[in-house]
Length: 288
Ligand code: B12
Ligand code: SF4
Ligand code: SF4
Image (tube, rainbow, N blue to C red):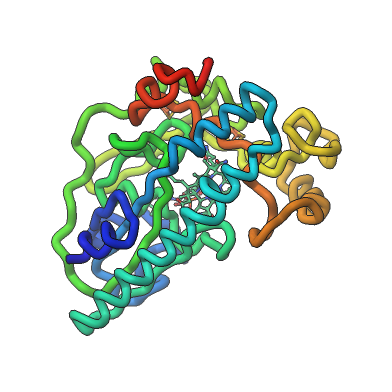
């Protein structure tokens, strides 16, 4: 019934983790630090529109920077996050109304201070997919082109198994995310220690992400990265450089988000997992 509620509320994916899979969570970010007595973690996922990913290709391949707002609105910031927020709310209401247990929906995205919990780790714990080398979660259906939301509950619900399906990422053979990243934010496989996570009896690895570099592209802080001026004077910024640059970026078209951070997304757009070839190569929507 929880999964039906998710689907009825516009979700494509829903998985359930039991609390034992969060043993290695960092302090303050364990589900029980947010909802004491939490026994299950429900994760919902929504696919990104192919028509919005292709708008990214028009920017990256045809120089149509003016279309980037489509990704900001329908892919990165607003609509998927609203859809996820409504679905998390509906599921939490459903649980509380029908079982009398407590349910706490978490924030779903950047516009609502979305860092209470690691949503990526929750999605893997709920069996929806695996960490891709780029650090975010790949599902067999959509590759990295999905966003997730989390509901914590004291209800004890039968968990889904960890993902056991076909291999979704082989960074030794692929490495496309590292290659397309314009700032070198994603470490190359084998060059630097990978991040290792153990969860649900499984071991995962993903790259080291230089978040300051990633943010410099997501917020287009230089002209080379699609910005209107060189707000940053270096291509290897420190975290403080980003903090100092952000108020200036805020003066640009911020919409309802705290800062405009939808200007990149190349790693997510070009990852081949999730029928990329059929959707974007065979159709000619991407020429790369
Ligand atoms: C802020 C943020 C960013 C910032 C990062 C700044 C920063 N310093 O973190 C920026 C703007 C750079 C960013 C970029 C992107 N982001 Co972002 N981001 C977030 C957000 C809102 C919060 C991140 C956070 O602070 N999490 C809290 C900390 C505690 O968790 P964490 O960083 O995931 O992981 C740590 C801990 O979990 C811990 N840990 C270690 N071991 C273990 C073990 C267990 C069991 C657990 C639980 C935890 C744990 O170590 C980790 C490293 O410190 C999350 C949503 C969320 N709440 O997770 C989305 C989120 C991660 N982003 C997402 C996306 C899609 C992107 C982009 C692709 C957007 C784009 N540009 O198009 C890029 C991807 C870049 C990349 N390759 O990684 C999606 C990923 C969806 C997916 N498919 O997995 C998320 C989950 C949002 C969502 N609602 O779906 N992001
Ligand atoms: S969002 Fe852009 S800058 Fe950040 S890791 Fe992905 S490709 Fe690199
Ligand atoms: S682009 Fe390739 S290496 Fe990177 S996450 Fe996707 S499948 Fe893995």
